[in-house]
Length: 188
Image (cartoon, rainbow, N blue to C red; front, side):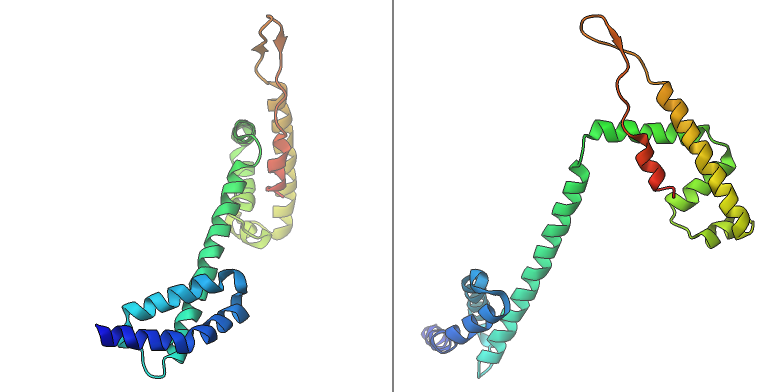
């Protein structure tokens, strides 16, 4: 054990500054101490695997640690962005808006609903939708235009049918519906 400790101490004294400089050149001073510490902790655990000279092996370990840190940071940022997207706006408004759109879609004829869903939710190109519904691209564009107009009309009709709520003082009032038309952008 004393030989291992002496070998590690010698390797640490000889290579620490160079590993630190490498990490600083790649990631900056903020993470250098942490990465160097982790590099030498790995070197201690795998001391039998460390070749002579140790510097290239240590730099490879530091490089892998940096790469893993970048991946972990990317995952954290992606998760944070996803959570922000989930929490934007009032959830109740989003649910009400979605229900309004779904009601309007349900009120449409099957052919209109199919065209709108193929475009908005399945992301098909105009040529692909025309192929699916069995018509020319020109006929598809006309059908899509008509379906959008009918959807807008159905959404306007649903907005006019807002339920009546009773306020605390006994006064009837219609709550403002959220901007249901936001979903029509997806149908474009």
